[in-house]
Structures are given as C-alpha cells and as structure tokens.
Amino acid sequence: VRQSEIDFRTLQDHVKTLLLNTSQVTVGDLLKHFPAEQGFGSVVGYVALGAKHGEVTTTLESIQWQGKDGGHRSAKVPTIYFVRERFLEL
Image (spheres, helix red, strand yellow):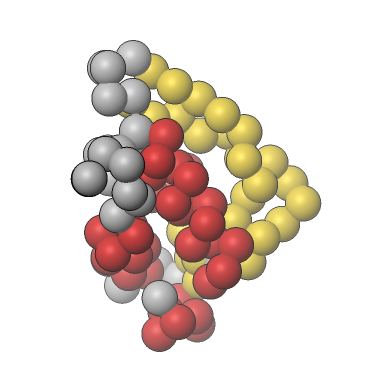
C-alpha cells in the first residue's frame, strides 16, 4: 500500500520542518534535504501540496532525486514556493 499511495503526511512534515528555519522553500530545496522515499511519488506529492498550499510561479525549477532503483532522476517543474506565512494551512 505504501508504494501505491503518496504519503502526504510525511511530505507535509518535511515542508514544516524546513519552514521552521527559513521563510520559504521550493520542491528542489525539499528534495535536497529529504530523500524522495517514494521516488517519483514524492515529487508528485510535493507538487500537489504546492498547488494547494504554495505559491506557484510560471518559471521552471530543475529538480533531482534518486529513484527507488537507485538511479538518478531529474525533471523540470513549476517553481513552487512554500512560505512560512501559510504554514498553518499544511
């Protein structure tokens, strides 16, 4: 079940953890600090959380993560800022 469902609770905790020490973070920042435990699912989860609780921009951010098979992955996603002012929404 863990492999088929995105663990939004853990992803939200990651966002909150970083926002305790900085005013804003992006998906790329999150992936640098926390491994993508669910591979692409973690990326999709962060983007989904950002669409609902973040500030989505029209610029793109290059992100990298390690896949479940150990291979390195990369993608371009909209730059999404999670900001401390919206901390309680998470």
